[in-house]
Image (cartoon, rainbow, N blue to C red):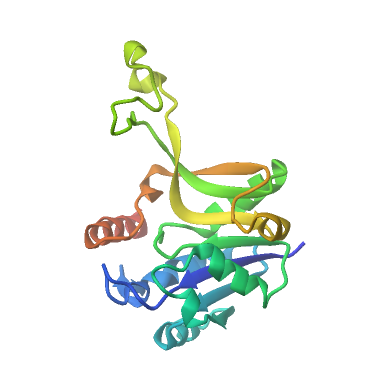
Length: 220
C-alpha cells in the first residue's frame, strides 16, 4: 500500500509575493513541510506540484529525495482548486493513499505526519483532515449560536470545544478521490494537532507570528 505526499506550490501569490520561496526563520517557506514529509517514516515518496521555474529550482537545490511535477498553468490560477491539482497528479502517479500538505503550515513535523498516518490506519478511515481544538463560542451573523446554549454557558474547563481545520494536511485514499472527486469523503476522521499550529500563513501578519514560533522551537 503506497503512501505519497503531495505539496502544491503555486508561483503566484498576491498577499505575500513569492511566498513559497521567501525565507522564514532562515529557510524558504516550502522547505519546512518538505523536510517534514521527506523525514516521515510512513511516507514512501514525496512530490511537489508547481508551475514555477523558480520554485522548481529551489526545490531541487534542497538536495532531498523529492520529485517535481510540472503543473499546467490552468491548474495554477486563483480559481484553480486543490482538487484539480490532485487530479492532475493522479493522472501521472500511482498510489494508494495521498497526504496533501500545504506549505502555509510550516510548524508541521514528520512526527505529526507519522502519528496521523498511524491514526488513519487504526481507525480504518477513508480520509482525514488535520485540526486544532478551539475553545471559542461561534455565532451566525443572524445571532444564532452554533456550538453552545447561552442559557447554559459552560465554563472553559468544562467545554470540550470544536475541531477547526488548520490547513496543514489531508489524507485521502485514491479510491475516495476517484469516487467523489474530493479529498474528503467516505469515513472521515480528524487528527488533532497542537494549538500553535492553528495559524496558516495567508497574510503578512500571519508570517510574523509563525516565524517567531519557528524560532522559538529551535531554542526549546
